[in-house]
Structure formats: structure tokens, C-alpha cells
Image (cartoon, rainbow, N blue to C red; front, side, top):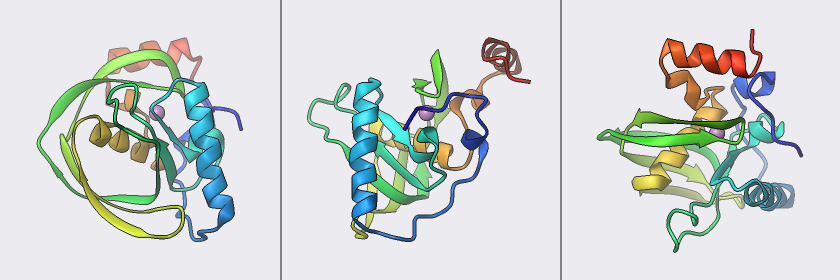
Length: 161
Ligand code: CO
């Protein structure tokens, strides 16, 4: 698995739901966590490694010491509250870091790789990374939120048409 870079079509597709919870899915989670760690990322969505499925991994331990790697399957934001601005980056948009404003808190429904349904409230960095990664499942990149001028700069930098 190789990390796809902006300009790759798969990053713009709406990913389909995961419908089989098996060993393969558990293994995919482990593999994606390894790739994320090797790339010094704190989140990675399946489309970023060429798999158009609603599946993502997060490990914010570089930002919050007590955090552990987590896997989210078919995540859905049921409610969002507040607003905050934080600097984001993305393994699929190398070397670009920009402020993005998003809801501060989210109520999330998701499944574990073994098919257990969960509902959890997230705030802080966990909420932020989840929203960024869920965007990937919908073909959205964080640079889509930037001003037209910044978008133009990024388009020329990555030779997008
Ligand atoms: Co990203």
C-alpha cells in the first residue's frame, strides 16, 4: 500500500460502506496503523492507501501522550457543536499546513473492526482528526476549505488541472 497524493482520482471518490467484519478488516487496520506511524501521520483514511471504503485509523499520541491507536469503521457524525480553528496537514497533501475552522465537538457513531457498534463524544484533537479523516471518505480534502488564492497555489504546486 502506497499513500496517494492529491491529484489521484481515488481521493475524490465517495467511499462505500464496509459490510464485512472479518479478520481481513482487523489486519487492514493494523497495516494502516503501521503505514501511518511510518509516515509520521496522526490519521489515515482507507482511500489514502487506494481502498475506497469507509474505514480509518487515528493515533494522536504525538499530541496527547495517553492516546492509543484507534480504528473507526463506517463512522457517522450525528451531531456537532461549537467551532474552533486549528492548523491541519495531510499525508496526501505533503508539506502544506493551514488553519481550518470546524466544529469543536462531535457525537460519533461507528463500528469497531469486529463489528461492535459504538456512540462516543469527541472533542479537541480527536474530534478534529476524525472530521478530517471522515472528509476523506467523502472525497473532500482539507485544502478545499482554503481561500481561492491558496487553492490556486496548491493546484499549481501539485500540477493539478
Ligand atoms: Co488527510
